[in-house]
Amino acid sequence: MKVIVLGAGLLGVTSAYFLRQQGHDVSVVDRQATPAAETSFANGGQISVSHAEPWANPSAPLKVLQWLGREDAPLLFRLRADMRQWLWGLQFLRECTPARTRRNIAQIVRLGTYSRDTLQQLRRDLRLAYDERTQGILHFYTSQKEFDGAEAPAAQMRALGCDRRVISADEAVRLEPALRHIRPQLAGATYTAEDESGDANRFARELVRRCEADGVRFLMNNTVTALRAVGGAIDHVEATDHEGRFQRLRADAYVLAMGSLSPVLARPLGIALPIYPAKGYSVTMPVKDAAMAHQVSLTDDEYKLVFSRLTTPATASSSGTDRLRIAGTAEFNGYDRDLNRVRCEAIVRRVEQLFPGAGDASQAQFWTGLRPATPSNVPLIGRSRLPNLFLNTGHGTLGWTHACGSGKSIAHIVSGLQPEVDFAFTGLRAPGGRGKALAAA
Image 1 (tube, rainbow, N blue to C red):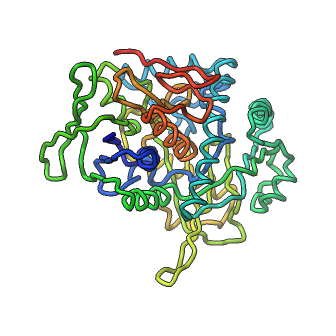
Image 2 (cartoon, rainbow, N blue to C red):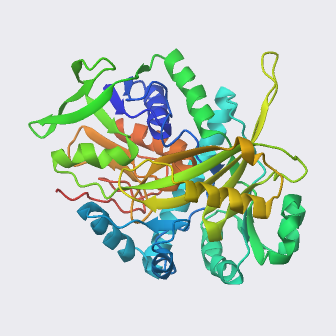
């Protein structure tokens, strides 16, 4: 079949790769000049199956109320006259029950484990290099209450096959000596040895090169303006190129992988996608004092921050780089992309508290991107109600963690095959899973 993938971020690129492996004629359309230039550009870098507890959990409503109006809050709802924001917020609250949280954790862990395995196989097969580190991920806690609250989700994850071990503060410092500075404040930690980290943008660019070598076409600088349906199916995509020239693009099947813009394109088709943009921030800075900088990828659950070390080895033509990437927080403020200096400075301040002198803050580069968040944190992967329109979107903060498994799964679904993972795919039933139907607007 001829397949058009809409979006050249991590989800679009992995979808294109696996669709081509299934023998399809694949084209990818994106408004940016280069792939992975938006949400995938400077994310936290974690392949974090252990980061499976959704934002919507029993402790979230009280925290959100406490954080209202705080510019540096880890999770900030900037209330707007936006009906979509209010409806999404109500759905978010609905997902905060213990039963729904357990169900969502199960979905997120199953997809995450499958996706991590798929990434590892892809790395071996293609010999990809993307500043990867396979030293696990350590969640640390400076609040006893937060540490106590992590034990039940960690136990559920272990039961699902994600070996997230609860460890003492002393063991955490042995695993990551850079935490010694805050040892008196540490309540405890959890550690998942199988988790990883790496540069998602570099991975996407490397995979694009392999896709192009296999015949996948990338139509960059092409802005998708509409999906047009005729007779109950997508007839064509309308787009404009970098010179504003109008064009119609046709295929047998279409994969919508445009992140937070996905609901904008789906809405005129009568498809209501429960996705709202969650603006995340990241700071990238050169390593200043290697002795103070962390080696293991870290998660600061209390502050909703993740820490990765990205080291590009020196080559004959390059001296290499050693960087710290700190990312996280979430701001619900529509499609606003402006950098909020208060939130940026709060991240830098937390880094200095934890690892004083580790990074060169004077050379810090700040970034923000819109993450496509569903109320449950469970992404939308599968069929829409239109027979030739497929979805691979809504991955929130876990796009890098879930990218390879999601891309391989949607390639199977488009090809009429059963996905290999027990997950609640949209529009079909996986063995033991539950299919989800999308409401018409």
